[in-house]
Image (cartoon, rainbow, N blue to C red; front, side, top):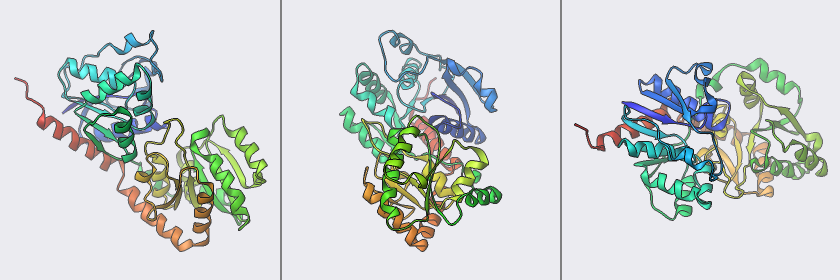
Length: 381
């Protein structure tokens, strides 16, 4: 089985890049012969990351919108004649190049759609035509959540063959012993219950909702600190918001963390709180970070936004408030703080759920999809 895998990114520290990197590594470890097709701008990144697969840097630059001067680059195809199957890991814009290439060489075509970029382009021209053509061309569309599937069907006005395969987590990474770092972090907040959010600091991630909820939490208890891991242009506004609510002393911005230090922050917290929003069709397609917190046996408080319900099981691995429901966020955090047994149960169930989403298990589902599609494909002479 020889796969042509198209991706917009491969850097493991970024969202799409993390998915591409982990899936690529697992597929190769299972004996899948794949070639990775990446944008020209990433030329040389494969060896830097230690990738063992062949990598071809032939795709045009990434764009959010398709302006007239850029369109000709996406009308071109790449040679995929040697492959059994073409898989565009993400949707717009590279799905169009991958789909056209698969069609030209008469290859089965799988298309992935992770969230925003699988739906929002349907509201533009010519992006709507390009994305709908790609969806129609795909033998199978793979999405990480029911929400993403439903949004594609709603905004395209079409019926497509869509399968749900959740994103995965590098489960073993979060089982490492980092007790010394955990003790160091907790020592910075003596006597405090730690709420944690990990992610970029921008509007739709919902840090502002948690900060707003802290005012209600403070009325009931004074032993809470909200630790924010990440960077972004919204930090200054979040600091002003916290000051305005009189909770600036409860909020700690610690910057971006990675590796074992990031694992330690997950393990040091009492509750993982992540409350994204849906803004102008920008949404979380799934939320791998929830699985990372669950892998550390942490209870979760989330909001019902985007594909969150596929990553967090309400009442089983966490508690889900309504979209932008500040009072609901406050109530659920307080409930977990007041009920340690409930928090522990949710954390343990979450760890079990995360273990079921290790990348090697997710990769097997992709391989099953490949094999099923190839069995149905007409055999060439």
